[in-house]
Length: 400
Ligand SMILES: NC(=O)c1ccc[n+]([C@@H]2O[C@H](COP(=O)([O-])OP(=O)(O)OC[C@H]3O[C@@H](n4cnc5c(N)ncnc54)[C@H](O)[C@@H]3O)[C@@H](O)[C@H]2O)c1
Image (cartoon, rainbow, N blue to C red; front, top):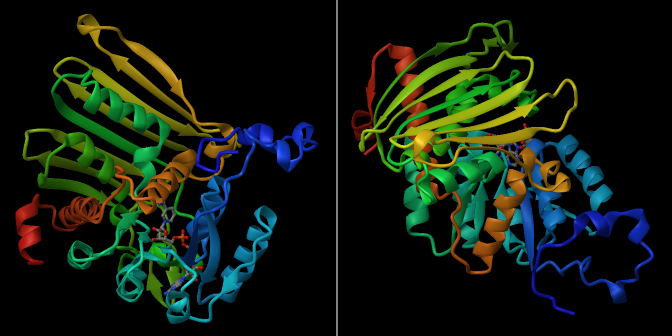
């Protein structure tokens, strides 16, 4: 039986009706042996998602975990035991995790303000590293990380996995590969959602720890806009603030200071103009990207009616008028994959990481792309604060 990786029929493989098929007869249901071992640094919400998704994909096994919070470690162990019978090493500190020669790659899933410092330690291992988004809370730290990566002998992938959401995979294919829309002129993106969830230490309620809402969360959308624009941002103007959410939240005598709504306009070197709308006091989740070129319009949308516990839906519409065929489609991943995290995008991010480990060329989020997402986000936040447009070259000259 072939041991090389191929997509599996995971649904059937897990069905009660197929459990009588013995291992010797499993071909389509054949589980490949994991070829790599991961250590997860920070096992909160996303650290556990990476443990779950890596295990579902099956090309790597989770070997060890480190977190300074006992409760996070305890819960991660309990959750992991539900999906794997593998033993899990619990490291006493980061140095012990980095000293483990059995580990092939590290996932940094700690709060934003710790990414730079944790990376400075993990990078000494010389091994492949995955760093969650945003790569840092400031442009200066993100720029230093890019410099570190540029002279690194291995690779670093950033957790900007929204590019693997089903509706954006199709959007990029239509707009940038098929070029269905002709020359792109405008991009409008929005995220409407409920407030940030509770976090360990509530780091996401404070700019000091998260970088601010546009850095912390909207970096995903600025990454998508940057990719779609295929150019460098030159000027950003934004308005926003904290209208409702966490206005009464305090920790250690400090009031929350993160934006819960924003409107940002981004101008690119090639003439593309983009806008981004954020609202974080909505009952349900919805995001949308509208791209218009000289031949047509594209609308990529995701809806997630959380309160109804309905599965999320992804759709894409192409409107070409007399220029060609228009179409509307529902886009999906297999249910098991969609439900594994971030509507399936984390699963495909893991495939990219594994492919890189196997020496293949992939189009994953690089440190430089992670930096550009932080740059647009930080420029938006500065513009909100000053009420003035921000020239990207001025922002960058402060860090050089
Ligand atoms: N890519 C995505 O879609 C996505 C989604 C959620 C979170 N994130 C990012 O992942 C990171 C973690 O977010 P979360 O939601 O899991 O937060 P969380 O608060 O749920 O978990 C963070 C965990 O890190 C631990 N931690 C804190 N400092 C640490 C350190 N120095 N070393 C090791 N562990 C440490 C905490 O104890 C906690 O258990 C953030 O950067 C966040 O922006 C990305």
